[in-house]
Image (cartoon, rainbow, N blue to C red; front, top):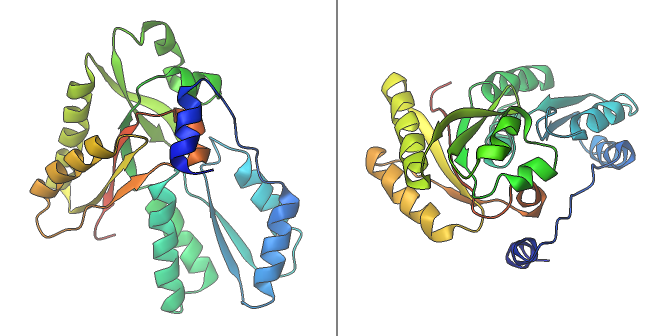
Length: 237
C-alpha cells in the first residue's frame, strides 16, 4: 500500500495501528548482520512512544556479538539524522561504543515543532501524553507540539494554524541566532504547504539544503494527515 492510498483510507475513517516488532525479529536481523560485521548499531523510535526500544534491547542481550541499541528520542527524520551520522562514523572507523555515545549526545540536541490538523488521531493511539487536556478545547486553540525526552509535549498554544506555522519558523530562527543549525521540513499529506515552508526556511539559510520528508504509514497512523513540522539540530556538534 502506498503512502497516498494509506492516507486516503485514514481520511475515510480507517484507524489501523502498526504492531511493535517482536524481539525475535530483531534477533534474526542482529544475528544475520553479526555474521558479516564486527558489531551492530540499532537506532529505534523513541522508547517513550513505542515498545520497539525494549524489544531491540531484549534481542541484543540474546545474540552473540556487540549490539548497541540507541534510543533516538525521536521519529521520522530524527532517526535519519542519527543513521547518517552513524554511517559516517562507521566509515571513519569509530568504535561501536564511541559511535553509540555520540549518537546519544546528538539525539538530545535534536528539536522539532509540529502542527497537526486533528488531535483525535494522537488521542486514539494513546500518544497524546501532555496534550491530553487539549482534547476538549482543540477547536479553540491550535497547539504546537514537540518531543521532550522522547515524549509528546505541548510547546505552546496559538489560535490559528497560520500563526502556529509562523511560530515554528520563529523558533528555528531563535535557534539559528544561538548556533548554526540544519533544518528539515516534515509533512503528512501537505506537500504544497511543505514546499512553501521549505522555501521560507531556505530564505533564512542561504546555501544550505533544506530537505523535505513525508511521514510514512507507521507514523501517519498516529498523527493523521495534515501534519506540518520543522526539525533542527546543531550543524557543528
